[in-house]
Length: 105
Length: 470
Image (tube, one colour):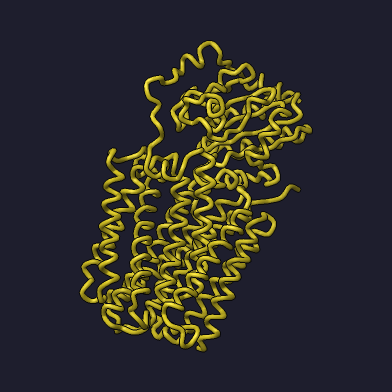
């Protein structure tokens, strides 16, 4: 992937990404402290599904062509399978759990 | 495809994850939140597929097909009681995926292939080493956690007293290998890469092995966090913003849940990870002394009469309730009582189930309305106004020693103050101790009645008794 801002050095890029990471951690902390205990299990399975975002990395690693070698393709395949299980299994089971939470009446 | 559009789509996906998690802060908006997060994922995947770096699709299509099949089967088949195992597996898969992506990137860099990483810079190599280390620990650690929860492996702590030194040694070897991997050109350092993978996998095993079954909620939450951090590390390899943001969100989520679980057990994370529960030395509390002559056994009819006159009843469920498959029986009893004008609520201790929020899901499955589920903080001030508390399959979380006995190993653990109610009914098979291995003076209190027997049958007998009295 090319650098987002043309002409920026690699170190500047790193600082940018680290800032993004730090801000996202703070945002996550703020959001998740507001999730009630009742929903903690769906939160965990749902966040599992979100961490399946590695599938994006797996697709790039696998799809960049066969010249990278069989082992790379194999690892990419494993990564895609595992990440897809996370995404599909995670979102579906979260949906199943959340659908059970009903209100009175 | 235009790179700006790709990056903007990733931003949109990340925003949808944030809005999705925000939806999870309320039961009413939670289903929609989950769907928003899922649509964010769909956008991220579709945009990546039409990325110009991706030129071959056969392996990708096969991988997605296999993963989808397994994912759908797992999500449809899993029992709600087995949810901790499912989450442990998903944590492990997440870590494994990040490990595989990092390893693939490293080997591609070794082969000098352009595409995965255009530069084999120190930064992306550091990120690879981090993703490999954390991903591998998450993968093997989750496998052990799954084994313990599924009872394939013994739940009791396994290891020896010097285990933490072994772990420290393994970590040092892993870090040295990682340093070698980072500071050397990819080609010659392949040996260090292999050592890092193997040692990190081993470290995951030796870290989780010595942790007992009762502490698994903490371990699952922590591994949840690791799986997020591993994904973020994988994001740093490629400078991929959506991976970094979502990894950070999941990492934060896992850490907070870990913290909540530790507070609920009054233990530090270090104590959970490296110290087994404090052994009460010498002056063990004698169960006979606590119980002798003071435990009153009751019958369903007697308790049924109490319930008939009650205006407010609180049910305290523990994992024993789920083990006895008694959730529906409890709901039936609650319905019966409510039809007679009794107010019924459920008081749920944070560690009542086997993972954060597990008991709430088990009750929701039995169609208990979520407004009736009370947290410890909400429930404790109400016990003094409660006529009957029914404790089912819960033990340590009601033990007054946590509040009163400074020498007790559970001293300081927040508990449900059930004994403030007019009458406490404890449904239990015998007087055997809970996870902490301690006698519970609650059972010997003047206002406590023991209803011995199988949880499900006892509750059904109670429902019958209340109905007959009508």
